[in-house]
Length: 375
Image (cartoon, rainbow, N blue to C red; front, side, top):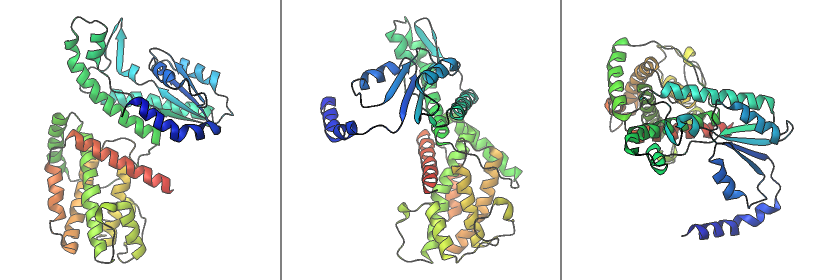
């Protein structure tokens, strides 16, 4: 189907109704030069109440331009949404006609974390001054340094191949942080004892995996813990529930959130310190099935409330030791076809792919959004 036909079908369905309605919020998009292309696309649709400000080379260090544009287009009493599309010019630097990678290193994560911190600070400042305005950072679109410089007439664009590959990884990492910034996630802090011998073993494996995939060992840790929670821990809760409740939904329709809720409603396996406790209220000697159900909930919460997609080695090993003991007890109680502890060891030993990192990040983020809607 051609683009013309797609647009025709969309407008046949939506356009008439849209024109009859007044927008509830004013919208302002502040962007670098890419904003011009969006303006060209929607300039003919007058019923869309959006103003686009395009400033070539706009980045986070030119906040005076952003504030000037806000002041000119949004009043403090306005209900508005502000879109900021400035990330591309923070990742690459323009010198004359050509661009190059700003952070031309494989150890770029702290640089981008600092960049996102600046985004977060700006967002907080704007929303504090304009009480009825919400700020949303737009993700960085993929682009190629090599192709851009080739189009600009560079005599040797091939030399930018490595920078283009690094840019792709940086865009993926930055966009993940932007999504988390836009959803306003918060970190949960906990303290548990550590097994130092296991720390050294898994630290070496995580570092090797990070080298192979291009992700940090902390990201590998988070991915593995996400795989354990979404699969093994949920399986253990589901298999336990099958023993106590008939006519269950398929396992594919159940996650830790609703499985925990079902166990709490049944109230058969009661935790030693009642339902809804914290890590600090669960003692090492509390090893009832209900206590382990609570430990699974707390593990799930720690992942989905994390502000960043990272899990430090120390905390990773703490959780691994807790869950290893927990799954041994579930192995004894549920008697699964394949031991949960064997599945745990498989995940801890495997090399994580980039696709698995992306999949777990999306699944964990999806869990968070679901919980926020329920509340």
